[in-house]
Length: 339
Ligand SMILES: NC(=O)c1ccc[n+]([C@@H]2O[C@H](COP(=O)([O-])OP(=O)(O)OC[C@H]3O[C@@H](n4cnc5c(N)ncnc54)[C@H](OP(=O)(O)O)[C@@H]3O)[C@@H](O)[C@H]2O)c1
Image (cartoon, rainbow, N blue to C red):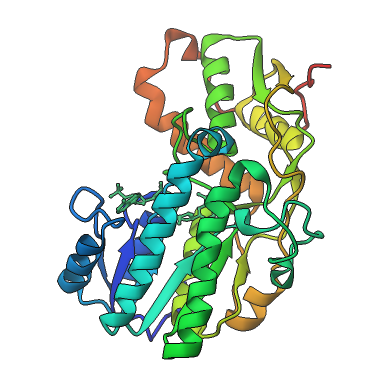
């Protein structure tokens, strides 16, 4: 673990610090010696200006890392476009303004790959961020967060406010949200495969066609990137945070099934959307500007995530779980996709 001298001893307010990414970020910052303050939504509803002002007064942070957001997979985005736009825009815009007024030294904004145009050239380069409209299902979420990039750049120009913007790709790892109503693709698929294996189901149904591709970053690597940027990066240009690997959803399902030793069929429900056709980030800038490179191999991270989920749900599994849910088999794409 690299030492982070600027963060050591600093008071850092991490909004969303009890969430999936946030809990890993807080752990990393505390390991670096930071004094982290996490404003929980039940105490500070960050959509409300008064709560933001109170949180800043209570935390007196030198650095704000803004992770609080309403997030979810395609289903949640489609069901809540208004909320995803309003909550994310209001939280971010007001928080940055109040942080500036409170004399915060640095604001680390965390946006998302969903801000990219639907058909941005691959790999997505930061300079192509404005080359088109995002994929429709996640545009309200992606654009609300993209406005914080504009705000950060405008505040730097007018007020000299040190706000930076990071663009993480899809994350996965222990602690992810496995609720089917709001989960992202990896936890959704892990849950389906593990439940099918436990109950002896001969198939699972996956959304879309399986043809879309995604890039995934292990959550601890994302936390490392955020800590490094908080320590070392002080410029207006947005920075992609990714692993630089692309995988199709079809391959992803097969890899999960292989790790779990699940031999049933995968049926594709093409009436459901694929979302953005392809996603992969150019990760050059993060390496050049603050020395970030992902370290966790995809299958190793996936295995840790599955092990975490299996252990977490072990007590509620049915008797059919007598066969181990994770098998020590090399991924060989054993699952036949349904025609
Ligand atoms: N997960 C991904 O794949 C991914 C990819 C790219 C970018 N990101 C970004 O990373 C950040 C964290 O995402 P995540 O997946 O870790 O989400 P998460 O687990 O849902 O955590 C989000 C946190 O936001 C807080 N929050 C929500 N509404 C709030 C409100 N009104 N007031 C105060 N706090 C509120 C919640 O705090 P409480 O627990 O106190 O309710 C929650 O813990 C987000 O900004 C997201 O856009 C995530």
